[in-house]
Structure formats: C-alpha cells, structure tokens
Image (tube, rainbow, N blue to C red; front, side, top):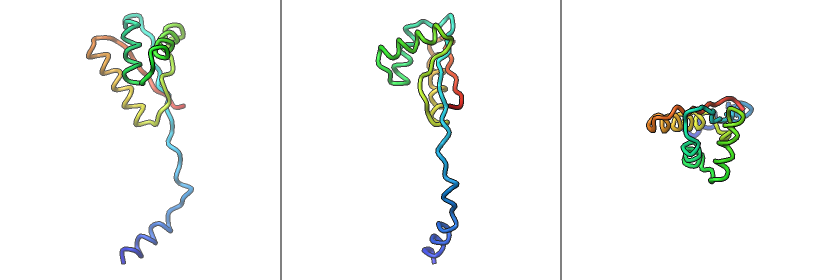
Length: 102
C-alpha cells in the first residue's frame, strides 16, 4: 500500500513548481571607524578571499562606499551577514555588511 501512495504522491507533483533559489549579494559597507586591516582580515576569514582580493574589496568599499563580497542563497547570505556583524561587534568595530537580491 505504501508504494501505491508514494506513486500517487509523485505523480501529482508538478515539476514546474521547482525553482532555483533566489540569490542575494552581500556588500561590505565603508565606515570611518573600522580599521582597514580589520576589514581585510574579516574578508579573508568569512569570505575566504586571499590577501589581494580582500585588500581590493576593502579599497573598493573605501572609495565607493560599499563593495561586493559574494553572491549566495538567502539563508547562506543571512548567516554570513550575521557572522560578520557579530565578529565586528565582538572586536568593538562598527563594520556593517548588507545584503540585497541579486
């Protein structure tokens, strides 16, 4: 009986309902108080950037006001933003990361 129920369930699924997850961009936001070295270290630690990429990203944020750190699924992006902000607060820096739909 269980196999009959499973077949009925799967035959009723509309495969067109399956969609790619929405993606979100994470940005590091420039401020006048967080040391540049802390921003670089944070990008290396949380976004697995190498030193050059982290430094370039930090300078882009410094010049433009914000810089893209990566594009992720919503849950992962929310988690990363939370981790970065918590890391900054523990170290007494006002660094902010933001996310928006890609």
